[in-house]
Length: 110
Image 1: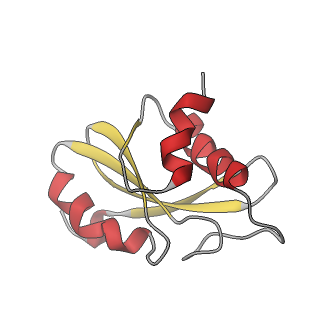
Image 2: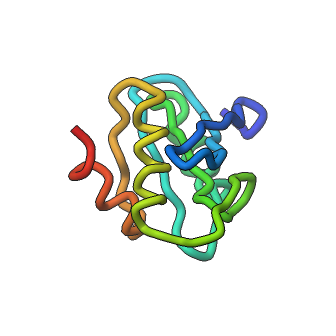
């Protein structure tokens, strides 16, 4: 798999912000959330290596890459962004990237 096999799409978070998601591969879903000094594009090599076995959903956090932003930052809004992605595809398994939004999302979602 290569970047040509990826699809960029968008989900809308609860506050109306458009969140960019790059979808790569086929198989069990895995959501990837980048850290503070990167974008979803930094996950592409990982996504490519998993593409034969998993579908990865690499999120551009709000204010990064192709995602929109809001006037005020909050971890709760980032959690809502991840929840919007989780709600858009069946059974994603969050990965640990060190971001508070990814770490807090499973506990906040039913």
